[in-house]
Image (cartoon, rainbow, N blue to C red; front, side, top):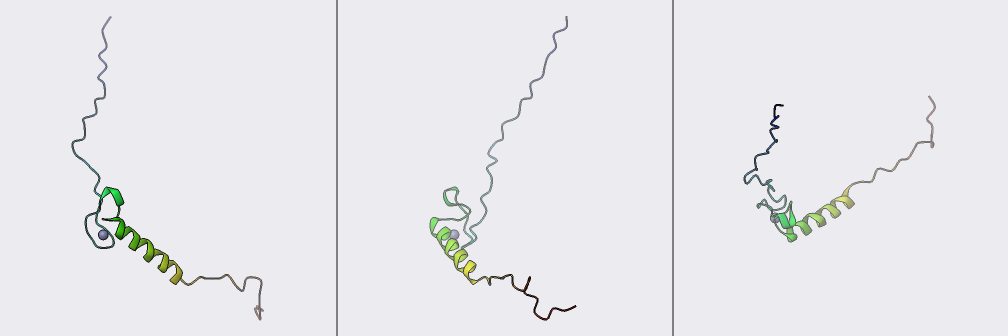
Length: 74
Ligand SMILES: [Zn+2]
């Protein structure tokens, strides 16, 4: 009986392949894991505020004229 040697799939340990956090979208500094993708909670807050204000600045497209066919005679 031949002993079958089953080669165990030994996955080589990944040596120091930490994912890059990238740069802070606010100030461009290297982001930290604590407050990624920003470099600091401050930038995160800035981005949040910017996002909120930007959201308010976005013109809301209201759907009008769906069934309100005024003069829409084909
Ligand atoms: Zn920053």
